[in-house]
Length: 489
Image (spheres, rainbow, N blue to C red):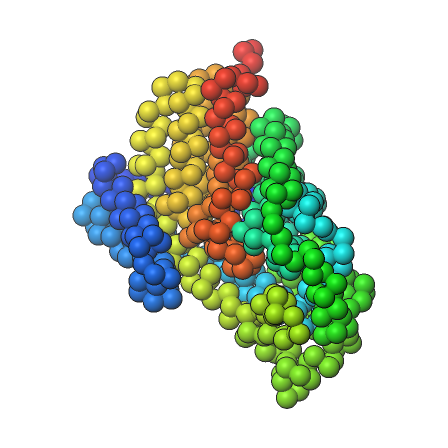
């Protein structure tokens, strides 16, 4: 799904599902119940969600991992086994963490070079509030289909769309939800996406059969998403639309705006399309932005630090804020650099620790098997798959595991019911790929909220495509709509 998805580069053949016969279903649930309970308490009852300080969610995940470790030791699992799985999990997110650092640097350098202000400047003149949200869905979908990466989409056009929409006075949660909806639609339907390749590999079908069959549920879902965003767009009360001339004047007075600045994001997208590694593509975007900053924004660099070089270094590593004569733009023209990504990176690391221990003690396999046991009918099998994928996104904090584990566990059950393998591959994507971004501590939820600067709690209600997809696949299963059966030879 997610990152060309080369970003994580998990080797599926290395994914070993640990089954611990000593562990009961109730014991496997203990860490999950405690973790979800603590996170819920922190979200709903603790002011500013800082029970243990700024890193409360990270601490809760580690505490959950500690409880899982105690359960594992009680069931004769060694520390060595748990540490091995933690290491495998951490190793699998090394590239995404590097991507996050580069995205932080990208945001800073694209700000001081004028790339983001230019996107906002021209975008304000093209995208009106009445069409902004559905247009954002379509733009994100096109870029994501082309690149095969929802992560790259958010890190480029997603950041710009949030900036433009915020200047128009549109709720950032709505904008992020539209961007994510489009990005994940494109990610699912792109043959370049690694989750789109992973799901059929796990189910036992081929890529293009999977994409064709997946369109049966995915196309209606994105149409509904566009209709909903169209209705929202026509009914939102924006405060920025009447002030566009003032916003444009402020941007023009602060930055040297030129269409040439678009060469930077175009180059990054072109490199992704040419299948360049995301790390290299984003690094190239940073280097180009630095060059353009010296060429186009020399006065701004002089005003940010004692030297232009220092201003560039600061934009890469620390927070940079450019003050304009319009207050609406001041929050928009601020970037945290690599330092601003640390909270998200720590969250991912802690989530991988919890997920690694849960996998190491056999809890993930036990929970999935329990769901499989209740699948007595075809609809029950689809329901169990959906619940398993969503549950693993919550517990394992990684969408790859939410595809790999149910894929391996449920493959034979689908065959026994006479169902073609594309039923399983489609359900894995409809519930595993797209719901990962709805979980704050999942690698995808943490990434998207960190990059777009909008919390999961703010956009979850507007990520319409993502939460409708599992319901769509279940509706099709319940009414036996386009459910393909195995052909008897």
